Image (tube, rainbow over all chains, first blue to last red):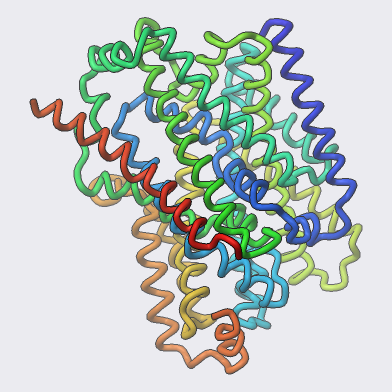
Length: 482
Length: 35
């Protein structure tokens, strides 16, 4: 890495940490920290939902998939756009209203417990377990992204890059404290947006023009240009099923809960969808142009295509900022995921099950130790040099989508749903994803989110119908939202 | 010929549904204007 790039890299990170610290110092309590006291404006809501959703995946995973497989991966982007749209259109406002009405719930486990008036705590604990399992996998995808960045920019080998990257991220989470603030995500979102538009455009200029890009890609493999070659109906459905995941992602749903005025949601939706669709286009074209640009010298790891284009094309000062943006996007996502997990361990397990009268300070320490333990597990999961950001994200995304997606939709729109139905659906969704992921061949090559989502919905509906009617209190609360 | 039609179909899938959801979001915003 040359001096201007390194300087820009460091300056960008320092500025970001300063902004995070500034907002951290203004944080007064847990609700402030988790939801910003439900005070987000629509622009910040939209872009922070986008940045915490996409982060390293959009800059490394998706361009890598297009670079390796060509246009057949466009189905992921189509499915995601439709899923995100439906989530904004139907879930966002109702969830925002319901979570405030249901005892001012600030997290997904909180909401489920209050929605079904579950005094047994079992819904909270089971949903916290699901969060821990799949966020650990999600975190490991971020660590793989960090490792790829350090490997490529500092010339380290994968294992060293992984441990250095993980150490940087854990230290950042500790020293900076709770910087997973939506405002820093907003800055990441803006920068990612411009990076994803500028990099492919400059790359096309360098190759010549768009026709030369497609000709070059077709000369390597004509199937790069079409989305149908080697794809069955089921494999297309399987890729589009990514869109189902949106309804169950705790970190994205949290942004909906945090918006200041429910009536601001259409504005946030418009900003969010425009950002997302342009970002997806940018990411896809980055990968696709990379096929032509690196035709003579193919990349060893397809997920480095964005980094390699930045290094090859952009002025070193801007290059440093863009590379820092990748790292900080990954860090802000991993940071917030680690913190959600640590609060799940401290608040939902330790306090609820082991020591009901635990003091604040004790819980903070339990949370900190959990961050280290989880980061260690995630680093070990990521230590396979063949790890791909996209594969790990797909697993975590599928896990959340199948365990929480149908539950969130049904709980918002179906009055007859019961706590036992919710519990059974959630467990069946999570188990289906884990089992399906570990089997292969035939129908097991289908993306696990699809069977998981279907089985979770079916079990939740059947068990709810077999169960006794929800109490009058719960029904009254439901009617109040309608 | 078949390759060309598949490429065309690819472009249609790329250029219709994704911009469409953005347009629908703008329509939704317009419908809720002033709330």
